[in-house]
Length: 448
Image (tube, rainbow, N blue to C red; front, side, top):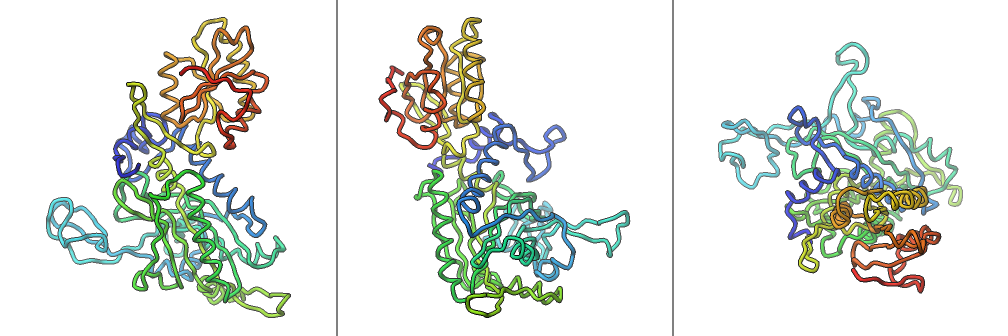
């Protein structure tokens, strides 16, 4: 359970097993910047794919978009980011550390206890220049969110998709915020990836769709293995609602540092389309052919971070167990998220076993992300696969040379069963889709 998992254990596992590395580590690193290693890039890709499948591919009312990171500066003026996207900042007069004023419990430096400066507003957008001259006319910004790329493309998507409202536009992409205070590993960083959906609806139906998406997004995390006990819904009070929001819920997760936001679902009303229509001089409306009326749609926005989601899935899956007097660290990741689905492990590097083990690997690697590992003892190899969350290990032993069968070991139950090699792909596919491990009469349970 997350309450018993220290962040240091997660950070250590991520470094040791190739999930996440400090960025530019050979030069001492760069604060709050992280690189995803071989296991991390697969896990992150699987989180993105699971979100896209649920939000886009399994629905007929949502389409995708991939907008540019750099946009016309007037986009950010119209959205309010240039003037209003800022946090109150204070500096310690003694140690010079910088803090967000609204996150401090006391009016002293959390680092050294020193006195703080008066708060001043600090814009969170990264500024750069387009073209060879660094002058004000050439200023552009790295986007602080992906949503505005969706809003300014609403008409383009509506016209080309030929769909009616309600219509969702989904986007996955990098965003950048020059956060004053970062930390807690990959929880808050200056470069991050977002999972954002803007769901356009008829005014008057927005509350119904808002309730729908709050439940839908909460259930998505549960379906992918996060315990309900570690999730909660928190409605924003009127004093904390964004100026454009009619209502907002956070899906909070019980991280090691306490309850913190995992995803936000907001009813943004018609603020965004109205703002861009006014600033651009372009009418941005929807014509309803059934009611023969024109209106500005309202928007429901579920917005999550890929990096925070990865962290939550890692924490919730993490466990230190003792099995028959032996300790093991295991990630009970949902099969859809596991970086490696199957590992092929020859019992040893014996020259008689290697050809068959390689044949088994080649047979299944086209259908599943598969690892081949013949280094060190079989016990150590099992433990390595447990730590990266591999659901099934396939062991090729000397009996396999005679009976053309292999042993499958289940990560969670540690049960081992013997199956024919020719049926291996079909059996693995069924089990990865959720079929009970011992449900088939083909399976003969062996001793652990």
